[in-house]
Length: 304
Image 1: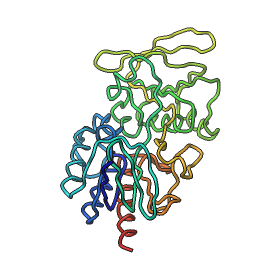
Image 2 (image 1 turned 90 degrees about the vertical axis):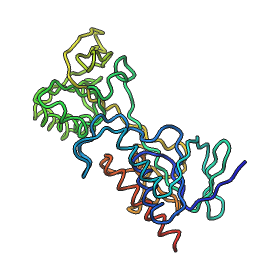
Image 3 (image 1 turned 180 degrees about the horizontal axis):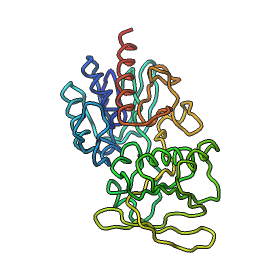
């Protein structure tokens, strides 16, 4: 088994991980990023990233993350595409195991992200980025005055429906139960701004040609199906933080890793950044900020 030693190991090559890599490598840390798939995570699904400060006109997510990757490598960060199997702590160092190599460093960042829970219905994957979205702030403005459907019944779904009501007066929320799980105050506000509810129903299919054109819903009680014209479907069925490698860390009620303001977890030298971290707002810009802070914290720790 080969062994490679670094100052800073980053697991995950999304915006948080690549931001951390840039700051760490530029700051003089020998840095490696370990990623089991392609760079970018959810960002590559963004057709037009138009709300990232300083990037205008809009760019697509793939180009944005490609530039981040090039920037990190320019400053000396090494990116390796490997599957991490485990993380151990030996003395003052973390040991990250992969199939062929053990990576060792005194500081480690978990930037593995979180994934939207999908509906797993026909058309969802095909129309992601073409009418199907998981982020109202990111994509809502593209559907001004269009026919918008929101799927979900928790705080996130209802809050995003409220936001979308500022974009269009034709917003409908579909929920599988006869009442929303969200806080009453949030539900009351949502209904007061004109969001129309459809209860006891689920989406069975999303249809269209080049983009979303309609959805088929089913009433879970009567089993009756209905096809409704649609321009956009915003899905908020929950998030799944990717924490399998660090199950020992304290998490919030939703399963996100708890950190302090320096992005440090309960284990000294172990940091978390981006969508895997417990916080109130998840955007590309906040993930990048988390990564920069984590890199700076790692550097401060090494230089002690």
